[in-house]
Length: 309
Image (cartoon, rainbow, N blue to C red; front, side, top):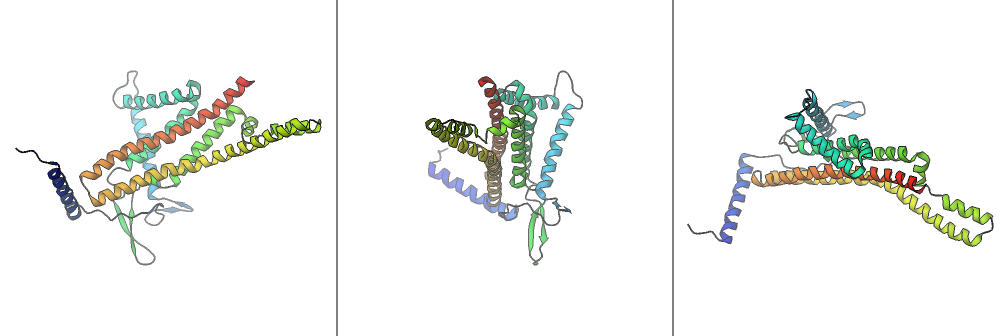
């Protein structure tokens, strides 16, 4: 049998892609994708006072229930020699704990582990659950006030609702600040941002008549104040960067999957599903890892204070 040339292979590949598109559009139609970044706040979801039960909130609850259910089933009949589901759950916890302790040390790693592990698992489960076929493709046509109908997905990836990344960013921010305050003490912790020591020293030198040294001390004091202001600003900028990093990456992946499923519903989307599976792990690892790094830096500042004293 003669071997096919490169041109023949490309032609056959093109014909296969065209056939897949035609078969998918004829026999496996999917809703035309539309770009909506906000969670759906209208019916059929329930409104409880100022709280909206949205499709992304329902997805978040499902992730929490799945996580709790998984670890409950894995630990309800714990044995000294683990096997099955217990062995799998302990492997996950051991890998996470080894990673956290490897970065922060044994003592601090135990402090940081609950928050870091919870963030990692929550982001990961949100990302992987959203790859199930029921997400975005099962919904209803909802009548709007102007008489038009809008397709409403019953389930949508929680990480693509900015409220979820923002909530996680706030949890990360508050946790790091708490660890920093409990390690340094409130006075020393605020001293990282409000650096007036050299400015006060320069004022004292000026009162004692040491004008030349006072000028240089004032200059260094101004630099210290500027650096402290930048550090304070960076603490709050971290909330924004954490939020938009997770939101942007997961939303981009969501749009990519929707477009591929709409254009070529068979083989090609499977490739992107594999990429999205890996991307979900990477995003969870980055979010949890950065939280761990910032927490370790806050504690390291405390340890260096002791070394100086």
